[in-house]
Amino acid sequence: MIRKNDNLHPEEGDFVLAFDTCAAYLCVTAGTSDRHSSLVQPGANRSSIDLVPAIQSLLEKEDRRKPDYIIATVGPGSFTGSRIGVSTARNLAMLWDIPVAGFYSLQFYAQSLLSQYDAPFLVSIDGKQSKFYSLLIADS
Image 1 (cartoon, helix red, strand yellow):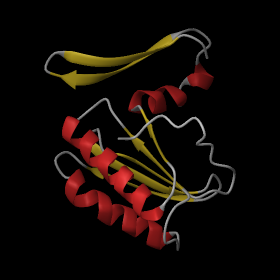
Image 2: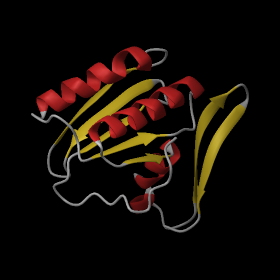
Image 3: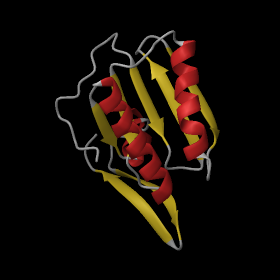
């Protein structure tokens, strides 16, 4: 289980591994605030196959054996994708003895819009089966 970790505050220069396995695309990034490498590829029904090789590839590209922190999405989105991402993040954090934190993908989408809107706004994604997942941002 990934728990909210209020003590997780990567500092400038810390090497962070972050990934999202909850959506139709597998998104993995590794690096610092100044320099990073990313990989985005179709991920529907493939996260269990592609996530670890993608992580290995980015760590090799950045000439690192392990990150300082791991950050992974915990949803909303694909239930199986969420389980794959959370279990991979937890297991790698235990293996490497590093902190891990989870975030909601809607927080990520909202963060990219905060500087563009002064008024409250709603971020939503299609949850399939006539459902939507939404996050209301009341204070920017």
